[in-house]
Image: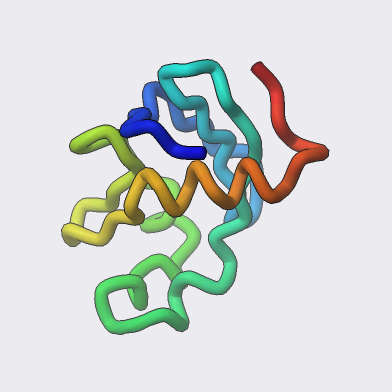
Length: 87
């Protein structure tokens, strides 16, 4: 369960995958491959060079055009993918 945790580290892995670490130690890889199809704000992420420009803002992953993903969504994805959970 997400308890207002913030992303403290992002590390590009490969393709459309980032390793995400939360302030409570929860971590895992997330594949963002389908995000460019989720609306116009995510369309620029189709360009892998642009995708790799992600940074942390407001406790979550974000991109220069203002696209971001709610930290609770990231947390839930990592929790569901229990094989990638590390604390």
